[in-house]
Length: 386
Image 1: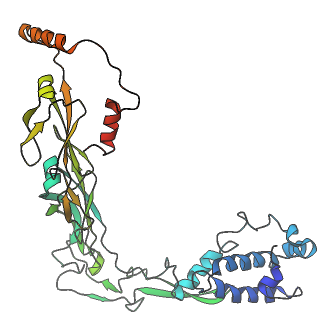
Image 2: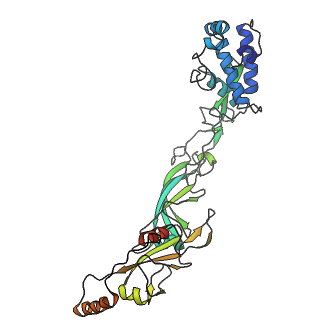
Image 3: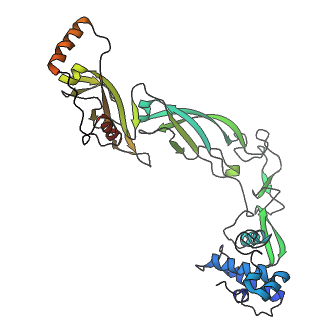
């Protein structure tokens, strides 16, 4: 059952509007979620606010006294009748000012001060091999750097900054406002010094008092082994300079990897498709296959079929940890395609005709319980093929 509004505010039914407002102010301070330590603060605050929204309005209170909750349904309760979290227009704004003053979690009106530098992003492209083994790349970017004339101070050399006369160097100004909760102090950024606490009498001729200028700069960035397409590398403190000594922003290097002529990547494995002829597949052979480390010998077993996968362990991509270090490498998977010749010489045709006589021409359907070619391919992509 819905709780009685008078009980929620702890006032008698004969309470005046002043009594109701005072009771609400007291409970609102106690249960506001931004400052309350009660575990049910948010739910209690909503109930208190709903009760006040009804009992502070003469018409709604009259209907509530006559018909109970049924008389005020749809008049601000539940689904969207309240304005924001406060229950009526302006409530959130008043509480924001109040909790800024007492150090609550809302800080929109608090002191801004010198702003930190903005983060920058830059794209870099590496080859497939460079993404595997890592490389140091030289990159260029534009960013806001400290002015070399005033050394980021903003004042013309030979002059100095002075304490802001409006905020006395605090960077913020205070205004007393009267609200239904009483007198409250609103703290805001000083409009004269923009929160710096000091003003510039003679601005630097090079940066016009900002303390920073836009520059094009060159940096060397280490690309770690094992990076993949789209990875972002954070370089701390290489973004824009902050205002008046505030911290610098960061640089984010977005890595793009060029496609390779032969190799593909799947997680930490390198994939290579190769074609062998029917004689190599039937009789077996020892072939040389390329890897990112250079060519290696691979033994093709007799009777190799299309879809067979050979695994070259440790010839894959380094496993990159979140801290930039590596933990071993993946493998290279060599995927076999048996190539049937489409054009034969006269001698080759005669040899195949002789072979055909020994093999016969009877067709043997595969068992439905066995694994066909496509099932093997699916197993390969699921990582079940060794």
